[in-house]
Image (cartoon, rainbow, N blue to C red; front, side, top):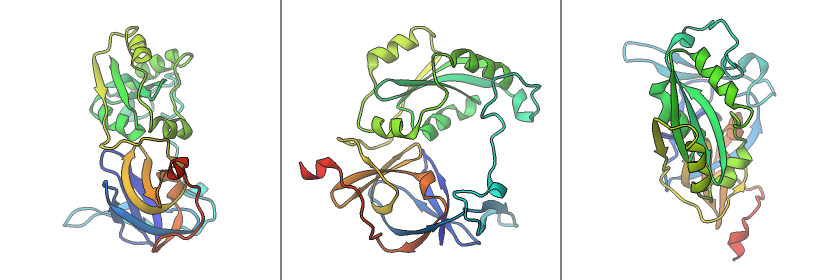
Length: 257
């Protein structure tokens, strides 16, 4: 079996398969994971194969050594680097979009673009702590141009280490409100993921422990008295065995307090 995919918040899960039907392991608070991590190679592809009873997700395995995906199984989101200087080549480009701000504790703020019906889902996928809808646009090109105009002062991406550090922090309310005052937001969001941690988790790659919760694509686990933050993407492609992993992992300082 191999980790071949994952679902982020708000309904997080790991996906396991071995070149066939995909098993979904829900990452609910209190659940116990006991998977040892083996060799890592391309996670292959997931395809929906239909029938009279509905489509079923199937895994197509790949033995290529590059992980999490080889060149043949790497896809690039067409809009990832778009700044609005395009001729709107995709059908999706002509649909309504919104521009939003997202906050990651304590004071990292980013700008982003998505479709209005996906706004809260997108915020939870990223693991944002707070957010604000600031503008509607008739199409994706106009929204991307607005995003690009703000990019000289607000990033459009937040790195994983920053998100790990945010887990044990709260948003600087003063700094956030000062930013919002510049935009007169249409709607604001205070996002909750159903868990808290007292100290910054240790960043590790493991799949053994008790699930504390998931924020974005960060899985928080308790293991042997320490708390760990696992980037779900870092699990992709690993062969797995049932039973707790036996490799040495770094303990958190709080364990010895």
